[in-house]
Image (tube, rainbow, N blue to C red; front, side, top):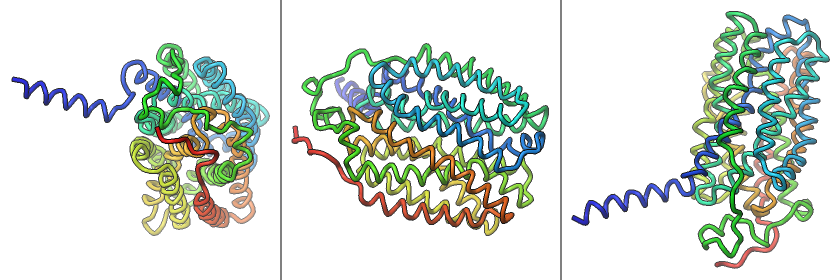
Length: 423
C-alpha cells in the first residue's frame, strides 16, 4: 500500500526539482513580470509600420530612424537610475508608472502630426520602456527565485517576444484595413487593460530578504554575498568592459535590423504582409529561445551560454547577406530570433557570474549606457548607407564583422573579485 504513495511522493519531488522556486507567490510574480514585458515588445511595431508612416509624412528613412536617437539617449541615461531605484525602493512602483506611460504614449502616437512630435513621443516611450525593461523585472525575479533562476528569467523575458509575435501582425492587419493611427490607438488601450492590471495586482516585492547565514548551501550558490562586487569595483574589471562593448555591438546590429528588415524585404519586391510575417516570426522565436536557453543555463556554465548565444548571433548576420535569396531567409529568421531574444536571459546570468548577485541591477544599468551609442548609431548607419548607395549590403557586412569580434571578446570573461569559499 505504501508503494503508490512513494511513487506519488517521488513524482512530486521530481516536479519540485524541475520547478525550483517557481511556485506560489513567486510564480504569480513571474507571470506578472511576463505581462509587464509585453510593453517592451510594443516597440517592435515601428519597423513594420514604417512605410505607412513615412509615406504619409514624406520623411526620409534617415529622418525616421533618427527618432531612435533621443529615445535611446533617455533609455541609456535612465538605466543606471532605474537600477538604483529598483535596488533601493522596489521595482513594482516603477512597473506601474511605466505601464501607464506606455498607454499614454501610444494614444499620443495615434494623433501624430509632425516630426518633432514623433521625436517627443518616442522620448516618452523610452522612459516607459526603461521601466518595464530587463533591469526591473530581472531584479524582481532574481530576488524571488534562487533555484531555476535561468528558467524563470527565460519565462519572464518571453513577454517582449510574445508581444512582437502577436501584436505586429495584428497591428499591420489593422493598419491595412483601417489606418496605422487606429492600430497604435488600439495598442494604447490594450496597455491600460492588460499590462497595468498585471503590474498592480500580480507583481509584489519580496516580503523577506534572506541573509547569507539563513540560506542553505544549495541556495547560497546563487545568492548575494559579501564577495559580490559593487558598481565602483566592477568598473575596474576586464569583464565589465567586455560585456559593455558586446552590448554596444549587439544593439548596433539588433536595432538596425528591427528598423530596416521589413524595408529591406519590401525593397526586394516582397509584399508587406509577407515581410511582416517573417519579421514577427523572428521575434516569435524568442518564445522558445528564452525558455530553452534559460532552462539550459541552469545546468551549463554561464560563459558557455553567452558564447553560444553570440555565435548564433554572428551566424545570423552572415545569413543576412543572402536574404531573401539563396533560400537562407529561414536560417536568418531562426538564428536572429533565437539569439537576440536569448541575450536578455544570458546577460543577467553572466553578470551574476562575473560580479555576484547583490548589485546586479546597478551594474547592468551602468552597462546599458552602451544602448545609446549602439542602438542609436545602428539604425542611422543602415539608413545612411541605404540613402547613399541604394542598398543595405555594406551595412550588413559591417554587422557581420562586428558580431565576429564580439564572440572573440567574450572569450576574455572571467569571475571577478575574490572567489567565495565552498560551503
